[in-house]
Image (tube, rainbow, N blue to C red; front, side, top):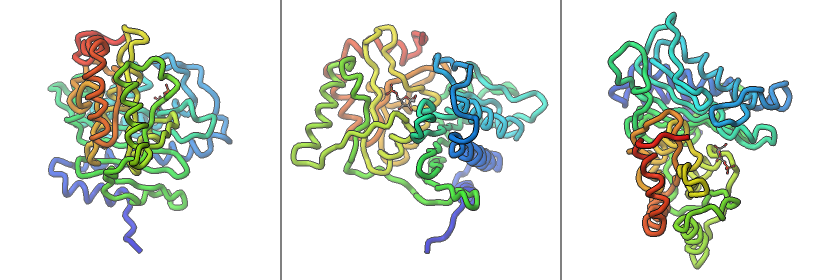
Length: 354
Ligand code: P6P
């Protein structure tokens, strides 16, 4: 029987291997794990408690906030605003940076998070997830600023997600590989279940919303046909799996190999950047997939290298096995110059998002 390793023990062992880690960094990861346990408890009870149904508020994207969204957001803020480990937070559900209240000590890290990604699936009992990313404070002043949040993913010190599915799993990396922990509800501990996750070299799935095919650019259309054809002729068929909850789709592809695609298009030439949020979804998963041997691109280049220009900016996302993602870049480079010309000003921060 393999040894039982709790996430706390694993984080401490990581801290020894992570030269810059301080107790604050280790404590921050522990605080996130604790918040995840509280959210997990509510997601499993969501069908029972009066927490179902959409809250009256709407988030910055005009999407109705589900009450569980609000609970998850408040839980993460409450667990982290007083610990002295953070100089600021940013959430997909909050328009602006979340400052640390003056009465609490200021720390050296910024926590960015999507409290409950895929929340439109809550009422139909489909897996949902929390996504988080940690940057180090770089600004001079005492308090955290947008400068501390708007750093490229290549500067991340840690990132991870929690998937609330048939079991609750927390997957994270501090740059020392990707490690997965499964929650044992009986003892309330995350136990190491997937050490040093690496993408299988032979992919099993591709994930995209086929319903939008008529909007796809020519390059993306050819790419998806390539995915269907290449792995269908003689090779192992590349099956299509799309749950509509990115954390769940990403998690499955991380363990089985594959590519998740949410392309930009020219349906509205003023919004060529697709749906995924750079700061709250793409950065974390790009950091993780690179640690697992994969690659993440917006169709033009690496997500890790994009210098963010606004907190809620969106990017197209192609993420998974490196050979599959680089193939997407090739198809787009060859056939989608119109789209690239429309998208580049957003990627380079010359045009702000609507
Ligand atoms: P569509 C959930 O809202 C989300 O951000 C991701 O979790 C999911 O992959 C995607 O949107 C689904 O979007 O347009 O295919 O319904």
